[in-house]
Image (cartoon, rainbow, N blue to C red; front, side, top):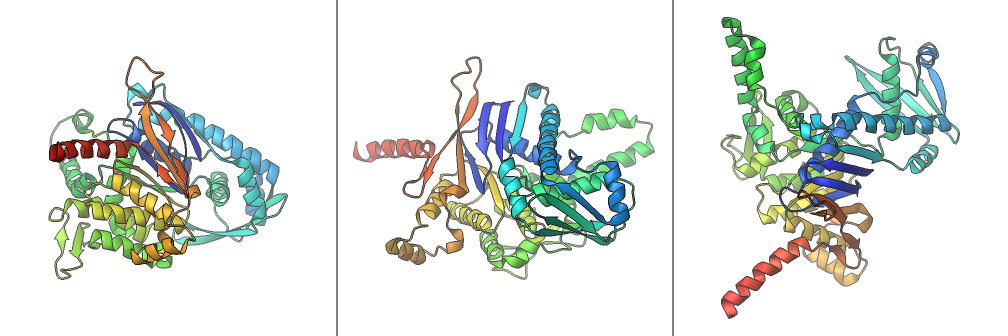
Length: 451
């Protein structure tokens, strides 16, 4: 996905590609979180709104009657282009809503592009896709068949006519475009508060409603004073914690297929998370299996990893985009290195990762994983001696790393754009910002010691 964003908070203009592993670095207050939230907001809007009208009502009725329908590849290409145009235009108008209705984002723009030619090529190379959709209490099976000229959709389902056209369009969208515009899960920098205080927030809201029932207070007047306006990712983190009692009933297919990734995460977390009978979260340290701690009793590190744990074990699926704002939050440098290796494992197992970071440890570990990926016997022996697995190693084409930098074209305010880091198998990741700070500290300390 190629993304172009203009006039978003401190960002004057940013052009970047979201690939297998996307990293945005930079100083504080330079727009990294804004970029993350904007990308997540678009993907959420794409997933939950119907911008696709490949099936019209007549086609839907024929499909209902026969269980078969055929669409030309050319028609599909036009549909995808129009769907993206509609989605970009619609999202640009409501991008301020992602950030709690900030009026200073009226001039913001957002544009996402995908390689349509490559997508059509992928479609022609497919044979068929089986899709199972939960509808109410039943599962409905659909099959997409592909050849050089047509996509055919078949099913034995007899879904009711109501809302069937948008349902079909959504099915096509997920079956065809999901490789290029993925489902996303976001972990905001406010995740520790969301995990710790969600139940208290819900309790306070319930008490307010009870009080309004008992008094003559105007409900709208009272609630208007207590309405908390959070950015969309923060709201979704709170909703995720609230819904955990339902989420933990199922195990993710990813966790079944990749237990080594779950084991790597558990090593970082140092224990296991469970949901108790009243919906609270407990943490059991690996070295004290008889103890169950509440989140309030647990460390900040434990709280910062809650969302990632439950996502990986219960929701994750191949093709997802996992977005984390400041993954180094509350982590010791040793665990920052480990979480970088975890991200590499996720990428190699089919889950894309998007992070913002200030962590030199994470960037340097990515660099190590890149430079260790060589056929040189000495390098192979070094990797084995230091405990690196093949599943952790990275290739240059998997990495997209960007740095926020002052936009010198903007004179009336502090504004920033993005520059891409040079990445190669020979030289690794060329990113100077962290090195400059470390070199400056070393220079001062050398002068203190040596004069």
